[in-house]
Length: 230
Image (cartoon, rainbow, N blue to C red; front, side, top):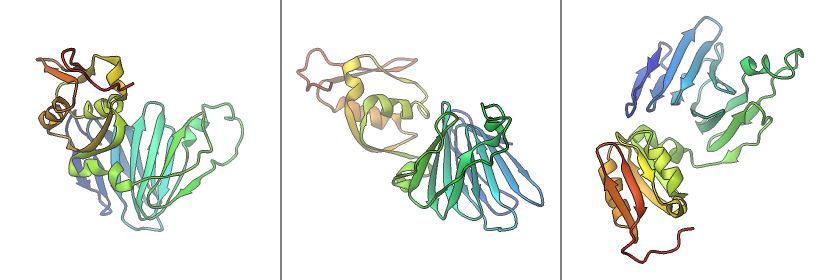
């Protein structure tokens, strides 16, 4: 069992020479036997560099998803009731977790789970009530920037950016002015340098940032004429 606390990251080489990377607030259990390599992601996000072994598939269970690989590199992230799977190198098969199928409306049937093949720079969202799903093309290096303690945004709304930063920041970012939630943010930021992100926000026209002992409050500066961010 491996886990990280808020703001922590962890890398471990497993007994088969596969490498596990855990992001902030994450947890996995690992169980190997002669026929397969089983990993269960119970919280957060993990990246796997899978050692090639065609006799023992590498299987990851994460929320609604099951991922099967032989030798590849991929990222798995739990997001509420859904699971995001992103392939960096090689190929993986992704399908709904059989654990969920037993609880679903078709639990009395023996239909095998339908797997979708993913290649490099492809991502799929798996949810219990949304299957089958279609893979989407993504920049996998951007998705896995957290491995280098970075997060990358390309015209992302501030609401989403703040939520991502809150996975790492010692104090939560709170958007006090609803109109600012749609403010588009682009850039590369360090996950462990909230001060740099605060300085960036303060450089934006019409944006005010107040740092208290418990939170970072972002609001519109009433004394400055600001663009319409809605």
